[in-house]
Amino acid sequence: MSRGTAEALEIFAWNPRRPVVPGRLGRLVPVRRRVNNFGDLLGPAIVSKVREVLGVTGQAAHAGQLLSVGSVLHFARPGAVVWGSGVNGKVAPSDQLGATDLDVRAVRGPRTREVLLSKGVPCPAIFGDPGILVSELFPELRTLEPAHRVTVVPNLHDWRHVPRRAGFNYLNPTRPLGECLRTIAASEVVVGSSLHGIVVAESLGKPASLLRPGKEDLFKYDDYYRGTGREQFDVFDDPRDAAKHPQPSPVIDKDELLRAFPVDLWR
Image 1 (cartoon, helix red, strand yellow):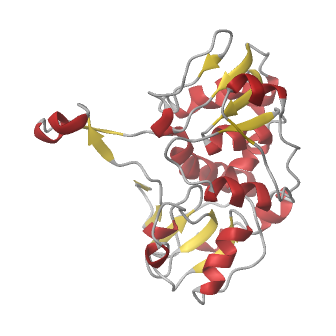
Image 2 (tube, rainbow, N blue to C red):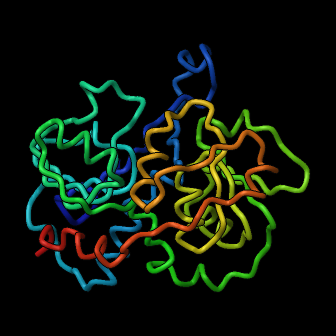
């Protein structure tokens, strides 16, 4: 997780330490390193940029937790503020919320809202993964010249297993955040099982399509697509097919998502 150095407010980001050596041997070798999946690191970066754009300065008004990007509601603590997060489809229904005493300003999509409402948590019908704001918050990305025809962005768990096809650029999602954003911005088409590879690409106006994930549940993708005006979406097994059939462009009120940002958390 990520904590501001001068603030009591925790801007949550999933980033655990994992064994450097895979398999059973990794449990015996006491060397760990951060996962550093770029999609999970987007939250604090976007919150910082939104504060800058909105002129929100000063220290946090009180201690607490802000959940933004990611399927992280099972990490929520009592009283947490939610702005754009989603439910993790791999988590058992009984454990999908870390707490029910939540202050929800926006969620990733309507499927997450359904879960919250079913558990008695008030939730407005304001949808959008905050990653969809990348184009507005990082305008320098829009000026990059194309360097790749098609970039494949696998999910963190798919990187070692995704088949490599000639003529495609492959982006490791654990590369530094800025590098991942620039690579996506410099691509003409993006396909992959990384949800935030798709979200960032669509924010920047790039055609994008979903490759079938190896370990991820389809819940989060469905939630995101429905939250951006698309009731159905295609899932492809081959990047060549995915690149030929980009999904319809997202439909979302980005201003509404920005207005839902919890500026009241800061003095």
